[in-house]
Image (cartoon, rainbow, N blue to C red):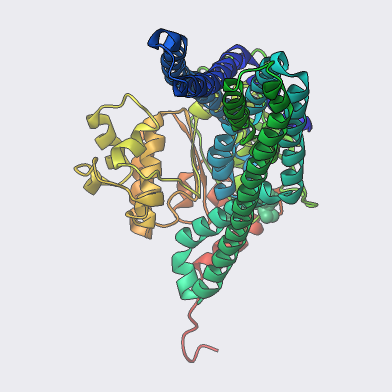
Length: 578
Ligand SMILES: Nc1ncnc2c1ncn2[C@@H]1O[C@H](COP(=O)(O)OP(=O)(O)OP(=O)(O)O)[C@@H](O)[C@H]1O
């Protein structure tokens, strides 16, 4: 229920429009009833063959209500759809705004298909909140009030009988169907989410599933989710049918009840016979707005479920927040860490443990170390994907938290291990880094990244996740983006790992050429041409094991020396050497 309160609070700014749409809906339904009542009057009166003038009131009434019903229904749809789309638009923007600062730290626990479901389907299902949950009860109540009032004029007893049947149709039937269908609407949404997640995994992991023979098992899981959803949808349709039948029965019972109250008045001469036909059709028409009410409760369940999933995201506290008065990021950006430690949430072992170093602007630094030693974690802290746990990390001589995360990321270009290539052209993928770049600048960046052969292929499609490119081409595309970003600090996290050694050396040479005066931090496993780095930081188990130039580190005969030896000794033992 808390979710419902929060959802209604969200739609409150449109309360005026919603009320207008509800009033228009009532007026359209009222016109429909008026049309039936005047038509009944006209037909019954005409059967008595009076002079034409006596039928004038009926004729005018039919014309008026007939026209009014169409116009009012059109205006009602216009107002309600306009309101709904406004609500949906602002919900979506609100959701995107809330989502952005959560990436990547807080979004890791969500699967991408699940996030997609929340952004698209859950928000879409909230469009029902106004049209199917809040508006129908208002229209039904106003219509019922109108009918009780009109009938009450002729017979208070008939009005009471109608009130009784309206109460059963408006409260009893919705409660009954809500009870019968409890869990159906949210169950359908859950199955849909599961189905989407499985479908995305199926599409993206098809090659692996085929190789390991998992296609059949995955398809069975998809079928299971689909059949579960279909069973719930079938149940929902059955309940829909049952509820319509119940309201139909109640309507007929109400007609009989009202007629039994009005008939004695007609036979006693208090009311004319024409009143009978008017009352019959009016009572029948008054049940029309009651038909959507049971559905309202079921949509309410779906909306609460969707709201809960959306608020789960909206309520997450971002790992990194914008400072109230961010410092400007200008000039040189020396980087310093003092006793820097960081532990991922839920991990027992720190990924970084009291690490200290200093990287002046323009330096060429390598970070090396065994897998899992904390190299990528360091870069994640530098671009503020995470906040340092303890210790100090400064950029430009100020603690990193003093800057706007967005501004910092514009000044530190990161080519990470997991480069994302958008399903767009090469040009679009490059323009991401510098939207106003000319074709000449794009081609120069491609050349510097060692993608000379792409210079004439700017408008080629890169494929889903860049699948139309080789692994090495994807990495070089990411390097070209970083070059275009023109940031004073460039971090290459295993950015050339997919390249063969000569191409890697050529690309690194070109990057250095294009990065005069910039700091380049290279994270690498491959200890090749390490003499070009002014300083090498060696991480082991989250700690800074040693630091120095290539020659100094070899002389120390410690961690780096061992890594170097392992990589540079021949793995093949010559026959007859042992
Ligand atoms: N998002 C995460 N959540 C929890 N633990 C993580 C996360 N990312 C990394 N870790 C853990 O933190 C430690 C350091 O990981 P990190 O990715 O920084 O190592 P690395 O030196 O870059 O490794 P590699 O050379 O294999 O890329 C590892 O033990 C890893 O399991």
